[in-house]
Image 1 (cartoon, rainbow, N blue to C red):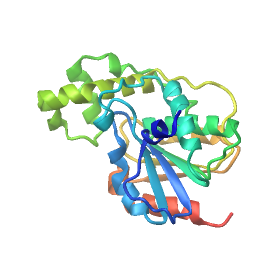
Image 2 (image 1 turned 180 degrees about the vertical axis):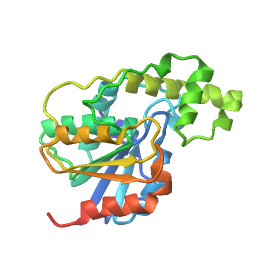
Image 3 (image 1 turned 45 degrees about the vertical axis):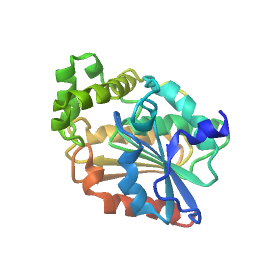
Image 4 (image 1 turned 90 degrees about the horizontal axis):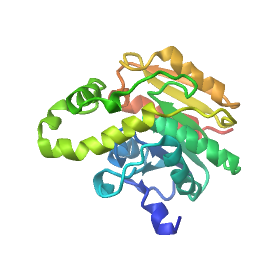
Length: 248
């Protein structure tokens, strides 16, 4: 991809050119780059955050949604590889799988992230059949609302509903049709984060991430649901800074 095309894939809300580390963050299903604005502010200027902006939302609304996580990861590898080193990866929910698949592909090129943070997502080796993306609009949006993170009343506005549905449904399809492809995992440290009251995540399933790295594995469980990050920003920020700024 050309330089301009590469830059079009990420947003940096709080530039910190003097930072010694960059964190590349991947949003949840239906999410956009702005979902990480609070985390970006909290980590700056120690760590500079760059967030992926998937096609089909906000300023990329006119581009088709990529509804296959392997295809999305393939598009993002060149984007991340172009960043100065060192860098780490962070993904929440769907973004955790994207971050993992990007990390696998980077390591195949000899580019090893400083760490991989996977949040609110079971390990890639744990498969659970779901097909919410095939449901009618009302049933589908009820499932989206059940996870929290979105005020369900916004879907009462037909214009917002029409704008949000393509990205949401496409992302859910990407997550629900994702199949882990056996092969090399990663060698970088993996830090898994989870909420103790997540309605769609069983904490023991998070342990599966341990099997996908030959590096260290750590897991932190916070109070909260699927979007526990919102209520634990200070603790999560401290966890990230602590992991990425300690001496090897």
